[in-house]
Image (tube, rainbow, N blue to C red; front, side, top):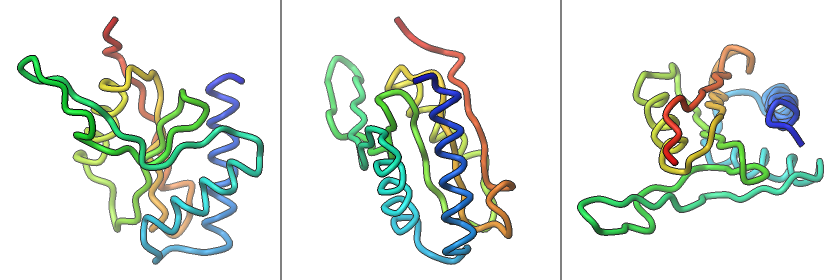
Length: 128
């Protein structure tokens, strides 16, 4: 399945969840519900995936944890904040770079509509 197809399914489900649950819940609630909805759509989903980092010749296995990895190819970072900041985008870009993935979605469930809370991020620095 192409990443655009996967992204489309994720966005559809995020909008549906936001319409039904609304804003105001904790991030982990949206994460759990979204992961369950994606699994019910037949997608492979992993939650709280460890992101290793190598620094100064040392490997740190659990330096970070990304919220959701879909089909081993799309990283989802879930937020429930008033306004997305540059730090949130940098966080997702760091995960994309460290996991050597090309695309991720930053999903903020706290807006009046879900549409305003969706940001697609592209990793232009894929190391070989």
